[in-house]
Image (cartoon, rainbow over all chains, first blue to last red; front, side, top):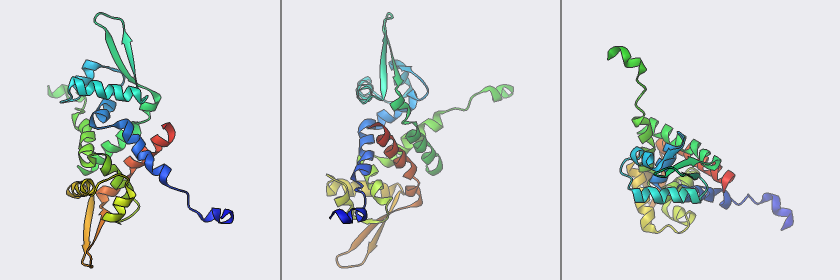
Length: 111
Length: 111
């Protein structure tokens, strides 16, 4: 069996499930739209809510917590009155930009 | 107002909602995984089902119909006994490849 090792193609399972891993982080529609906003720089909760049509505060909170837990964004709390909470992409989050960019390009061409 | 036209930035609304348009086509997790399989060439229903872990026949049928309706794939029926049904990406579908590729690259780097 050892001698035939070079003839066995590489198992593609690992590469294939990278798509699933990315989808697990991106989660759903709101995650993509939150990322879209944060590529332009840090934003407060209210700014995100105004920028993303039809998102409920509950869905936005849950999406932001999910993305924070996945290490895609950071939450910064400033002790102002009332408290200021800002969301900012991490380098891991910034690196999602090519995906969103390709989605924009595809729609511009085909829809 | 005419004279100030050059100073008005382009309205970004159209570009931004391209992400939503792409998400509408891609729909959800199963759509991404069906595309992943079809980038390798045409496939029969049973081949897709075996290649995508945990997908139910019902979810797979619904995903394939959605992608066909969006013009992303074509369904070819061959009058064999039993009938052979093959699914194949259209050029519009092939053009989704850069999105999936960027998702793979991101996961390879960060997960």
